[in-house]
Length: 306
Image 1 (cartoon, rainbow, N blue to C red):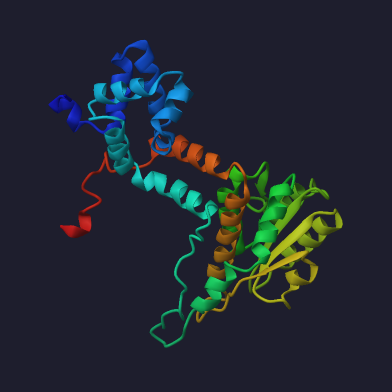
Image 2: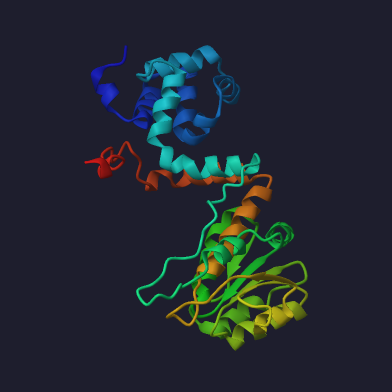
C-alpha cells in the first residue's frame, strides 16, 4: 500500500523517487517514465516493456512501488497532472486522425461602441481554411530553407510564424528584426531555388517588403504572399497568394486575418509532417520543467468555482 507521504506527492515526484530506490529492472522502467512522462501516457504497458527491455509485470510492480494502485492508476493521475501540457499533442493526434480541430464557425464580429465591426468573423474563419493552405504547407515541407518576412506590424506575425514553424521544418528564418531592411536583405541574399519565402504585407503596405520578395523570386525562391487583397502590391509577384481580411474601424489594418492564415498554415504543416506527432510530444516533454502543472498549483483549476 502507498504511504501517506507518497500519496501527497505529485505523480511525477513519485515516479522519480521510486526510480532511485527500485531494483535494476524496475529502475529502468522508472527512469524511462521520468524522462518521458508524456509518452508514458500514450503507451501501453506492453509498449513500455518493449522500450525498456522489461516486462508488463515489471511495469505494474514499479507502479505499485511508486505508490499507485497499478499502471492504469499511474496513467490516470499523471494524465490529470499534465492535462494542459498534453493537450496540444492530443489535438494534433486528433487532427491527424481525421478530426478537423477547427473552432465553430464564427459569425460577424461584435460591434464596437461606435457601431463599427472591426473585422468580419466569417471572413476570418474562411481565411484559415482555404484549400491553398494545404498546398502551401506541402511546399513548406519540401523547402530547404523557409524565410519569413514582414515589416512594421507584419513583422510580429512573421516572427510568430517562425517561432511555431521552427520545430517542424529543417531550417526556418525570420529575416526582419534589428538592423531593419538592410539586414533583412543581407539574410535573404542566401536564398535560392530550393527555398521558400513567406512574405506578409498589410495596409499600409511596405515597399521594402515588395522589393525583397521580388528579389527572392528572381533568385528562384517560391514566394507565398499573405496579404489582404489580390490587388495589393505584394500579390502581383506571389507564386502562391493567401488572402487575409485586414479591415479595421480604427487601426490602419488588422493583423487578425494574417495571424489566422499563419496559424492555419502551421497546423497544416504539423498534420502533414510524418514526424509531427513525435516532434510535438518531444517538444512538450522538453519544456515541461518550465511550465505550470496542476501538481504545482492545484487550486488554479477550480479558481472560478470559488
